[in-house]
Length: 230
Image (cartoon, rainbow, N blue to C red; front, side, top):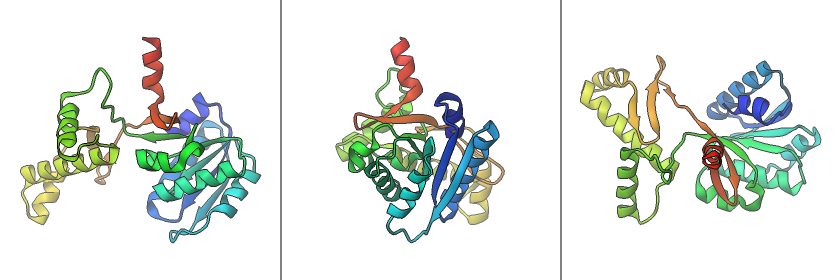
């Protein structure tokens, strides 16, 4: 989704990838690079950093020096936040694209003004729109009643994960072999983060939206466009 949006909607043609040396980030950066290049874009360099972390200044300096239209960041929240701050400190003028790692409100706040204008993808979890599904309203109300604050996307994912676990046990049973049989029977499960589909490998298929950080908040680009039209 992000690769297509970058090429088609943002008219970006060159990019640099900064990704963590571990399975999660490798998978994301590979899919992004393949789709962006298939569209006709060019990845100038894919720079990986150790899973143990460390300072990012040299990596972000290298990325900025290549003068790409964008830098795509694949890592976890603390790492993405630090790299965004470093890129802005180096006066990098291009766009910053990343994953839902930055989606948590606390991460956006910690990243501060440096996060403004950053694009990322995440599963849609709209709790304030006019068409909020009943199951989402029920979850949000229950979460507020218990924790006295609104749930973020990660709370919603955790809730869905427990519901899927319960559904798998209901369909298959609670023994190891029966549980996995039950998991394979879960199709089009109505979660609060949208419908959950599982492929033959057991990976969940989600349908993310593109967001931009504006005014210290994550804004669904398409939903905002629709609101302005209406």
